Image: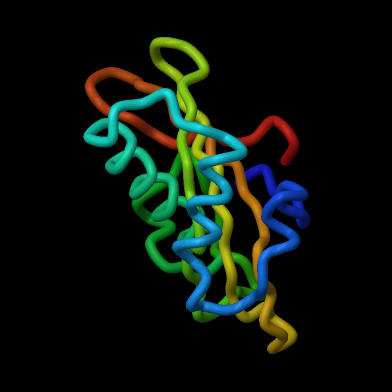
Length: 136
């Protein structure tokens, strides 16, 4: 499961809520946490991190990540999940942290906005893979 924190950085909390502001959220996140990766490297890593988070939150695609999400799908799942903003940072030559800001409808039917998740990705063998959080 992703390392999750319910509150985004202070600079992002002040922006108005709503889907039309995803580009503003992305710019704000990148201003607070600029990437150190080339865009051609960062994009596929962010897509992988998003797929892992989506599988974790919704249960869809869990089979793609058996080491990251072992066991049965969650009993309660989020719906209508989307990424509002994202940025990736190199930790070392074989490790990247993807910071994702997401929104979804929680299991109680309430819309949650601007939730954060950090997905750690490691280069293992010949490909990148999400790593389980030590905070599980």
